[in-house]
Image (cartoon, rainbow, N blue to C red):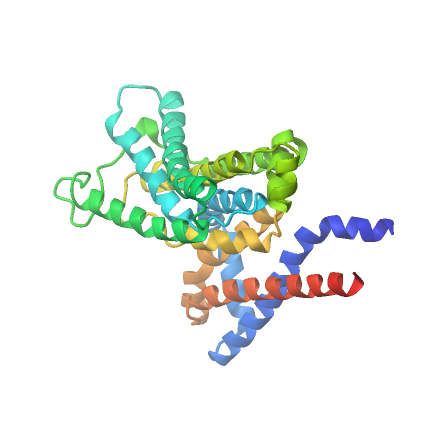
Length: 347
């Protein structure tokens, strides 16, 4: 019984690992069908992304927005809300930090950087509060509103960088460089890895404490588990929905902020290559566990980081990476379905 209980606590971490293993095995079959050697392909993929200095730095860089945004999806899920709007919230967060980096000058970095991060969080939180308000007060389904707000955010940024924020004589849509005092420091010299990953890991730890050790975490989990019972316990369901959707948007906004002030140093038309949608898969793969999210974010980042090297070294299309991501989600869905089936039979 003791061993079973210990295994139960480890299940949120073990399940993603099992799903990843099966996805890699299925991916190996796809690589064989493509006429390549899966061992050579996977060696190139993970050796580049995890064991080389620059490659690991690139993996950490890609892990940063994935981790922030998937934490945002997770905190909403804990309250029973489906935040599909991480992509748009990333774009708004990037806009908020860009404005601070572009138009505020003459302040030291230890003030400028936190201010840029704060406005990235604030803009993302605002974009998350819109569907939160519509769900809590008006009863509008948050899946629809968050999804539609993605397109509004993407087109808003596209308009801004093509018109009022476009750098003079820029050959393509992007803003001028932000001030140096607003740029995050590099933590691995000679690589792309910046201090955003440290902030993301600290945020994950703080969120774990919040969700598992605090009264607010109990409130969030209670609303997600049974909103009717939460009302009887004098918990405001509407206020909790507003809180988690604002927090979810703010976390995704930090992802966008780090992309601007840590990596690109300017606002581009394409802020994110789909991190907001990957974050949904990562959050579900983690089974609502913060540490599972850290692990899965690293895996997805490693896939993205090593995809091009795998294509050059083993002649395997980089799109195989997206197939592996999809297969990982499929296998975790199968595991969850089987788990629920077993529980139903026992009951």
